Amino acid sequence: MLTPLLLLALSGCAGQAVRADAPPARAAAQAPAAPDQAAPVAAPAAGAPAVATANAASPAKTDAAAAPAADGQAPLSGAALAASDASADAADADYAAIYGSAGVGGSSDITPILDPWEPMNRRVHAFNLAVDLAVMRPLARAYATVVPAPVRTGVGNFFDNLGTPVTFANLLLQGRPGEAIETLGRFLVNTTIGIGGLFDPAGKVLKMHRHSADLGRTFARWGWRESRYLELPFFGPSTLRDAFGKAGDYELSPLTYVEEDRTRIGLRALQAVDLRASLLNLDALRQAAPDDYTLTRDAWLARRRYLIENDRRHGDEGIDALPPYLMDAPVEPESPAPARQP
Image (tube, rainbow, N blue to C red):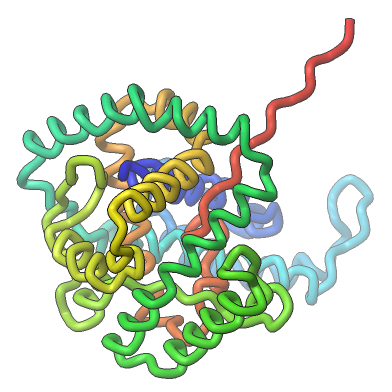
């Protein structure tokens, strides 16, 4: 339904938040920008200049390790500085992987957004928002109010486990047999010991990685790297490539083969409402955006490109290797604060 529309907003905006929370040692190590250079903090392509500046300043950091810190504090050890730099380098790498990087001369390798159908996409986006406001959001709020959080967690685990055959098939199609076998093992353990997938002993007890794959990413793995942006009615953000992928994944989903229509439709409706409920805390973020369509499109494409790049570079580490703000796991809604007693 409309859940991909909201999930994307988290990834794009949270990525900027992580960027802003770079360790203080990293910021102190950066040299001041020249008067004729623009500050890189507000531009998505600022990941690479920050890395290059910090690398250029590394000798100064080494000398600072031996000098007393300001305000009478104890000097930082070389190991502490190295750990801080490693953490900042990881954050810079995540940021550059999502938004691209700019060269020293100001050139950028950010892939341009292919949105030649923007007028049509905006109309579909407006329709999706109207459906969400009229149907999905009220249902999700009622669901989150009535159903306890542990039960919602079990429902989410159940549907995640049902999607495992789709992931298994696509991992095989991507030429990743090791991850496919681990995914199959997770499915067998969670379906049996985990009581139909309501619990996740494969991940919590056996520490088996949770992998993520779909046919759209399989197409990207074999060469269809970029595609035109396309917003689908009811299903939200996509691309032409991923629209074809959704059609193929639908045929692989176990829910497709539930013969009784009422049961099949009920399960799909429950899945949509459960995921929408897990994203309720993102509503304020969307309402504050000056252009909800641009926010949704850019954030969804950024997250999608990151996942595709992760398939190529870190496929053997599972989705657990992704930064938390880019994981497929939905965001748990915040519990309302208890009312204060007068």
